[in-house]
Amino acid sequence: MAVRQPVESAPRNPQTRAGAVRSQRLDAVRRACRYIERKIAAEDETGDPGPVTLAELGRECAVSPWHLQRLFKQAMGVTPRQYADACRLDRLKAGLQQGAGVAAATYDAGFGSASRVYERAPQALGMTPASYARGGEGAEIGYATAGSPLGRLLVAATPKGICFVSIGKADGPLVEALKEEFPAASRVHRDNRALSTALAAILDHLEGRAPHIDLPLDIRATAFQQRVWEELRRIPLGETLTYGEIAGRLGQPGSARAVGRACATNPVAVVIPCHRACGADGSLTGYRWGKGVKQELLTREAERVDIHRK
Image (tube, rainbow, N blue to C red):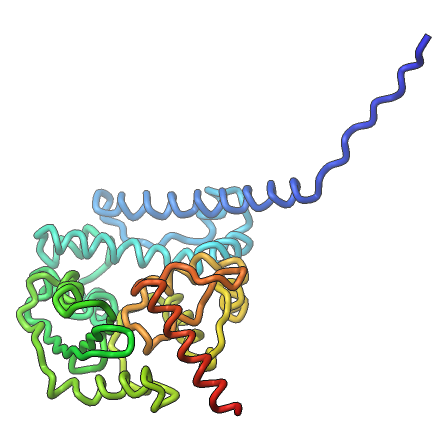
């Protein structure tokens, strides 16, 4: 008669346990995001624009408030408060674009007062709320175009600095892309004379005559985007970093995807060198102006470095 051997329980796979922990953490962050969104959506009914506190988020997600804050920032690249601010700004923009008055859109978005909106308007909207509500009417943006080693180059600026740099095959689509966010803008106009210096600086860089581009910028950004873009500008000519490495340099090793999104929303090609960010295996990933342009930029930069080393 055969003797049945005792059945040993299968050992737990450490990778499976780690995956389960990551899933639980991401679920807590997702629940926090949905809670923030629901509370902001309810503010136009309750009239209470009070901030979403870490304590109430912790109770909602059954996680320590400070632990949740750390998880949230690792996953989203911003704090819960910054995420709530971004949600409010999105509601403000939607209200203004749909024809709500400034006062009504401000109230519906959960801002406590119009003064708070006007204080943040230059960075968040690029203009006053009233101007944004009119589709950018009154915004003064000049642009110029020229041929470059990468195709047609468009450079646009407000009186404060460069706001848009794009690369393409023809001027028409480049100008349309510039106008896209503010379709009613009355002051998006060609101004070759005013943009000549900026255009020359970028062309000099692309053609290898200048190692750096030093131009004033006027670009809207979240706190996280700004940090990513600043880190991109620190990458030396001819070198690349992965999204994960950039996230690590920011002290947020879990935010590689958020870094990728920040690169994808960069409005000033070449000036902020998002082409120097690559995938985890070093491969080229998506690039707003096309992978071919990205490859050409990196090849040219590598060749320039090699020339200087010889």
